[in-house]
Image 1: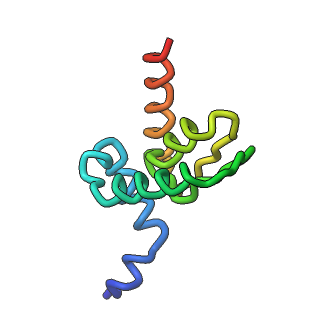
Image 2: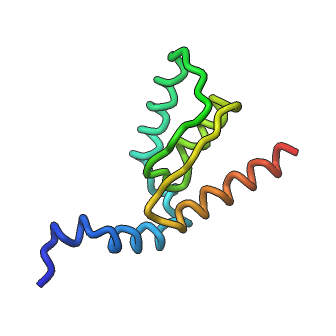
Length: 101
């Protein structure tokens, strides 16, 4: 029998779950949206000029997108266990760029 604790922290299990949820993730991610807004609001008052920023556990890129807008000269590197989450983030960026043109 698989221990629930093992299943929750099993990297492959997490990856599969996030991979399958990537397309609809943001429609259910109320807490993630709130925390990403909080992070970005706190960064706005800091006097920093980063060249490189890492978004670890980037998911669909909520924070990465905000970082790119807040620090347009910085390179934002997204890292996530789920390739599908990163693909969704990339697709959002492409769509956003098309609308700006």
